[in-house]
Every structure is written in structure tokens, then in C-alpha cells.
Amino acid sequence: MSKDSSQKQVVWITGASSGIGAALAKEYVCKGYRLVLSSRRLSDLEAVASSLKIPSSDYLLLPFDLNKQNPYNLYLDQILKHFSQLDIVFLNGGMSQRSEALKTTPEIEKELMQVNYFSQVAMAKAVLPYMISQQKGQLVVVSSIAGKFGFYLRSSYAAAKHALFGYFESLRLETDSTGISIHLVFPGKIKTRVSQNAITSDGSKHLQMDPSHVSAMNAEDCARYISNQIEKGRLDFFVGGKEGRILWIQRYFPSLFKRILRKQSPY
Image 1 (cartoon, helix red, strand yellow):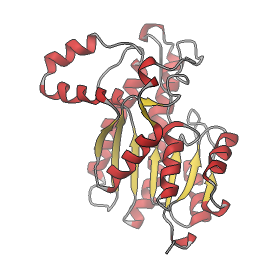
Image 2 (image 1 turned 90 degrees about the horizontal axis):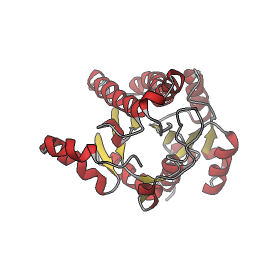
Image 3 (image 1 turned 90 degrees about the vertical axis):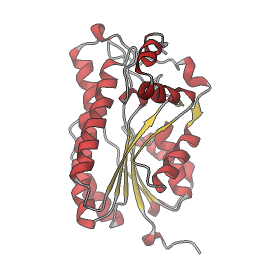
Image 4 (image 1 turned 120 degrees about the vertical axis):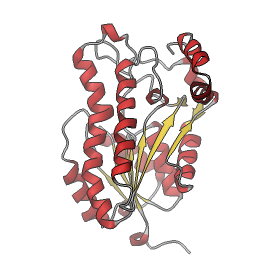
């Protein structure tokens, strides 16, 4: 028997217009959730919602730019007014980088930190008090394997992702007895437009898919794996392909890890 719409759980996904975010939207529709979808452009969100073929009563579109100071508490009010609940939040929006550190301006570095770190923290601070008051809820931070070690041409991006790990691991300790869970996901190479949309040293888009992404795991398989691991209660996990083995090498063979890291391709 299908659930009445008012009984369905609600998931809020940022970066929902493409890639992992759009795939998560599809995955959670299949699981019977109602959706709140966010990204910069309303037209892109409308296209995703249309492709899902769900009733308009089962979704809410909230467009905003992560590079701006947004009233996330007011967005939460809109969600609660529309659905009366919020169960899962995916902090999935972000922007990658393809530029050498010494050629990247402070303005670009600030933008990368704002989009990939400060906006995520601000959004978490807006939704967590509500979840804590309900003594339930899941916050899922979609980080990157770049949050585990450095990458060529990704200095500020990697810095932001490392900052996410430190912040949310600390926050997890502080909220341990509140009934909520904080999950950290570290995607590796996933076949999305992340490299095409990556920012370069002059602020323009990279506009090229990294060769290593062409045959990578697709976004749908990535989203399915993420949702399944969350259901199993996994708090920290990698998703991707063979590149995940580097995390094992980093842990057990640090000298070998450093040699491999120096030989990695920028793309």
C-alpha cells in the first residue's frame, strides 16, 4: 500500500540540478520521499522535477546561489510551511577548481571557500536546531576524496573539503546525544559535469571533462550507493572506483602513498 503524501518523509538536496544531486532526487523519489530541490537556476530545477514525473504537491523548488549570504532559516520556514517536516538534508552543492595555487587570486579562493565550506556550515546551522528539537534527522555532507588528501590544481577546493571534514566531525561529537546523525560522504571519480564546471584562475569555467571521469562511476549508481549506506547507518564512507584504494594505501603505507601522490595526473 502506498503512503499518503502527508506521511512521506522529506529530503532537501542542494546541487540538485545535475550530477549527484539530480541522481539523489531520483533515488529518493523511488524510495517514496517528498523533495526540496535547490541550485542556482530555477529553470534547471524545473527540468529535474519534470523528469521525475511526480505530483507538484510532492516537491518544492528553492533556488539560491551558494556564493551568496542566504537566509537559510527562512528557507527552512518555507519547507516546514509546505511539508510540515524535514527528515534528511544533503549538503551536496559545490564547485571544483582547476588552477595552480600561485596563479589563483584571493577572490577566487574566497569564492571556493564560500561555496564549498562557509555556505555548508551556514545551512547546517539553520536546519540542525529544528532536527534536534525533533530528536531525529539526518544531515549528509557530500564532500570529496579531495577532503582526504591534496590534488594538483585543486588547492582551495581541497582546503575547503578538508575543512568540512574537521568541522562536521567536531559537530558530530557535539550533537552525539541529540538523536540526529551526521554523515560524511567522500566521492571519488564520478561521471558528472564537475570538471567542466570547475573554476579556473581567472574565474572562467574549465569546460573540459577530465579524462579520468569519462569511464567513471555514473551518478545514478553513486546516488544509489550513498542512500543505501546511509540506511545502513554508515557515518563516513567513500564512493567511486579503484581510486578509493589510495585511501587504504594512505593509511597503511604512508611512504608509498606520498610517492603515488607525486605521480598523480592533474586530471
